[in-house]
Amino acid sequence: VDGDPERAAAPNGAERLANHLSEPLSDLVERILTDSDNDLAESLARHVAVDAGEEPTLEGAAAALTAQLTELGIDVEGVRLADGSGLDRAGRLTPRTLTGVLAAAADPDRPELRPVLTGLPIAGFTGTLTSRYPEGGGGLVRAKTGTLTGVNALAGTVVHQDGRVLAFAFLAGDTAAPADAEAALDRAAAALTGAGPFTPEP
Image (cartoon, rainbow, N blue to C red):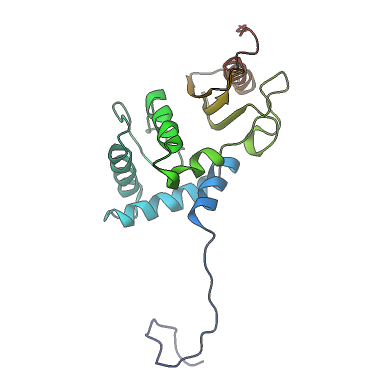
């Protein structure tokens, strides 16, 4: 091959050398949630920006995601998205917004949002919750974790002992010990099963 490569249109009848398709979007969303894949989250956020006519930048992704939440009828008061992964400390979320997303994903009229629920890690079994919930809630809690230094969050669904599925979101700031904060969030979520009293620890 002579010269530098450059983009050009293939001539009619040209032989296709290779073809690669991404996994379905639903699978990618599930992977983001189950494994907390921040790189993939940022990538998909930029695709949302391009689809919405925004620039594929942090700002464009934040604007497009906020607009999409609003279009779904989700309360975004007090919300400030700064990226697609939630790693930027300038970002702000509310429990109302997070539970709104979960409720929208459970809406029978919005089957395209179902991967938001099916991708949530299962307590004691999958993803970022594999080694959590040793004292109860295993298999009954499905939730996405969120962790920054001094910040711990847990949002998802839980099956109550009476059969109801409940959505919840717990956000904790200024936490001093990550392991203790995670354990407290796990106990709070497990208590929503109704299987026993929740006794907070200092």
